[in-house]
Image (cartoon, rainbow, N blue to C red; front, top):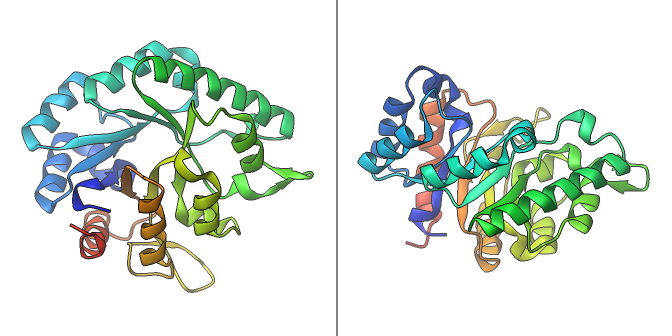
Length: 251
């Protein structure tokens, strides 16, 4: 991992971006982040955001795009990705009504293949971001197993959230190696050592970062994205994660 591969998922600082997207991006750039991953545009257009990022020297490592946006207007999704300069478009979660049984998940996988093909024709990479529920048993299988098996690895990549893999009862390094070069991006947050297993800034919990980052590097992961769902102090926590990752980076 290089320092210029470290990004931040803006959902972590959502209370700040909701009030002032441009000002928040400026603070993150001054903090030392080279890139951000979007989860909404904070009331700005894609073109306005691109202008702000260019002024600050920030890159878009990717963007989370909800399932309903893909279903309603995929052409607009593609246009927005080009406008902000993002080569990665990520479905952040599958809603409960789309993952209740293996049949529903198979239909979702088929849809992912279609959007993945669309992205490929546009020079983009389509990915899916996991939580913990993908690793829960559904009959004789899991949602994760169905998606990995029934999506085309040439069309559908994975944004592997290492914390949620562990929270769901699987080993993050094993899952990383199992899916190999399908992982273009990883989400990084730490796990508290107590029974809550709550999320913490990178370096403050139990995740084996040296080994996980080394494995991700071996597999050719492109972006290492800091994220916390429940930060204590969002701006302070994302700076803590950044400093830890800078210390772990090779250069």
